[in-house]
Image (cartoon, rainbow, N blue to C red; front, side, top):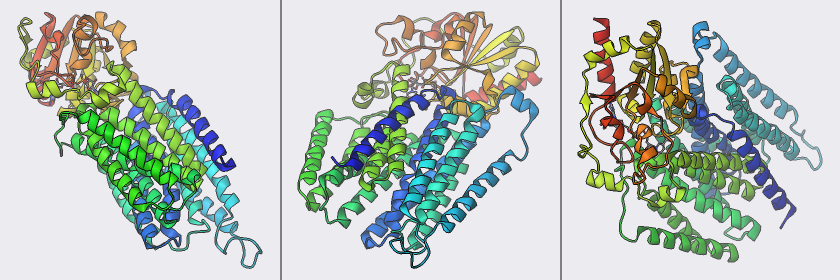
Length: 600
Ligand code: NAP
């Protein structure tokens, strides 16, 4: 083992522990921004891509480097913009009352610009003069300066993630992380091996346009698919840089380099296609339900074994390009096959897992290029993805193995289990124009949003209703289940978008004691997260999942379109509770009708 590798492994391990420490402090409220923030930070693979695209390594490397620069720039620009867009929406009642702080965004923009100019100026001044013996070529930065700037960038990234431990400091934290990124990228542009900036420039422009469009235009309801797409881009960048390095050396590489390189292309390749598949399923471009066939798990495991065997072969046999190419091809295929049997609703767990794989691919790239900042960010990204997927699994009371290989949702999707309800009893329905009179008599109302609110885009209606109720002196609280919706923190982002102050949002443990006192629980498109069977029915697939105890409220109104089950495909006992009334219809339309009655 070389000293460099040993140091790299220590850094990887310590960054993982540090990441765990920092990321476990991020509240569920900010889990969705956390995903896009780590995504943006993992775009540091840009520094490796820049060198490959700009150095004189040959046409193939330049072409692959160019694509990698484009992908990484898309992630950096898009990731930071959408994270900031989300964080900007999180406000307390006090913040809202005091209004927008004018000039804050302008000050942030100015700070980034100052860092940009200052970094460029410092790097320029530190460039060696012509004729200095032993110095890099004129205009190139001494390696030590670049290393110091990477250290500062790494510290800024960690401080940035630490900022996410509170919505109050989150934007400031992300600003620090963005400055760290600028510092690293500008410094790398002075890297002694970069001789041509044409393809780098084109990659920057295309990536900025794509990332900017994604970051500024994508609706909040499409955040899951955007996250999946950017994981695929990041993984593609890592995979291409690995392929470029392999062919640049004609496959003759030391085992210490070849091992992480093989890992980088395999994990990068499968993450690329797996994430693309996940994004397509979430966007509805591919069927969302699990696609299974007999012997699927055995086939997938067999394929994985062949990939691992080829990896070992290329590590032990220098110059085996054919096996290398087959290995990359199989890894790409494996990514598709891995996600095929997973239902669209399980995709968030898979996305978080793929995030973690993407981080590992980035860290491997760091080992190949011996670039410590990539090892650090890869490790942080890997830890964040793994932690989030484990948290989601715990909140759903499912094991990661069950998510990956269980083809959850297949039975319900194919057989329509639970649709229409069996003879459990009667349900009571209510019309929208009858609800205001119930609201009038209430002193405290708990709103329970779920995936249906996202589908109906009803968050603005919900927020408006809450405002009206508060004006009438009714106490309003929102109950947020950790896996309501389809992303961790999904409801928080949507409600923040509708200007709901986050101090009105209560997590599951906080809100459950309030349900028995609540005069009315208004369930807007939530289903599984309210199902009492999770508490009482040992045969239910939901048994053991912690739920929002809506059934303990004095009166319950559920807004949904039909008696169809939710993601888990099981009937909800809540709907047969005698205190429960069903307001059938699209949530947004029902709320509109309700407002109309309230006004009249
Ligand atoms: P859910 O159980 O999927 O139920 C959503 C309900 O919304 C459905 O019953 C549906 O009923 C209703 N709906 C859909 N469109 C609607 C519309 N336009 N207007 C009104 N209602 C509409 O949702 P949930 O209670 O939020 O639970 C989330 C589920 O996703 C959990 O099972 C969780 O384990 C899973 N999950 C979550 C995450 C995460 O990170 N958040 C990750 C993975 C899995 P109708 O069709 O009858 O309208």
